[in-house]
Length: 146
Figure (tube, rainbow, N blue to C red):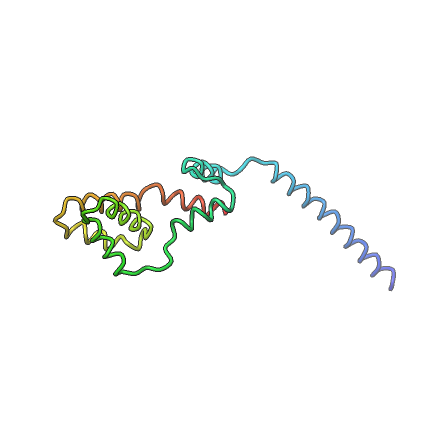
């Protein structure tokens, strides 16, 4: 190898080593810095919801609130159960409808307009409030912190 080429290679390697050291120092400074305000706010939301920021707890949180498939017949059946004689059946139907989240909203809105039962109207309103409430923000914060 000729001297100018060897010198160019050595110079390039030297600059790369210097640049690598500078990147490592910058990375260390970033790790020492405080979390971004958005991250801190997300962590506060998770704590308020009683969640820790660790992976298994967040996955469990999502599993409990994730619907595998949207079946309109199932949603309609759950809405009918809101007027069941059994309190436990009505409660269970309310919880299930909330798990469907935004997917259930059209049917819940339809039930709100068309139902003559005060119990169904009250439960539908409560389901819609829960779906639209801050729980959505908790889900978003949990997703961002994964």
